[in-house]
Length: 197
Image (cartoon, rainbow, N blue to C red):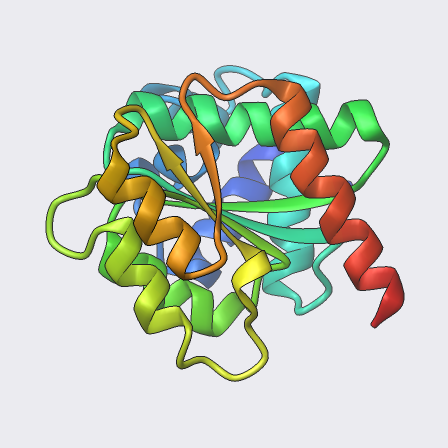
């Protein structure tokens, strides 16, 4: 795997080969368009500094050396997923907390990623087709080393049923649109929890 200082086309190609991702899948993970990843890989353009940092974080993650807190964001809507991913990164940057953020747009893939990644925090949309956020929380409860305080449910349509489901499982519930303050509070708790462990 090339080092973090490698030229962008080489870095993108190596990440895709190592993680077995198409350009479209890598774009979804980074919260950018397919054409953007294609332009980076062919050398037609360079990423913004924040996207370059994310590519470097992916290299560290794939090498087994993730930096800072490991965060998973899950939402079936690509626009919401990109917004949530960017908000989490912005909150981490504002707090000075290094993050490795992984994005998934499907509940079942998120469950697999949860087991593999063992994130410090997972922000999960409640309403998704297939495996929704509450069902995902129930399955996560069976994973060793994963506590309810590591899972944060996110919803645009809070109702009594969603509030009750989160409360019964001792889960944090955040309303969309999320704020940098709300996300930052979750990241601060995760940082404190990691320092205690």
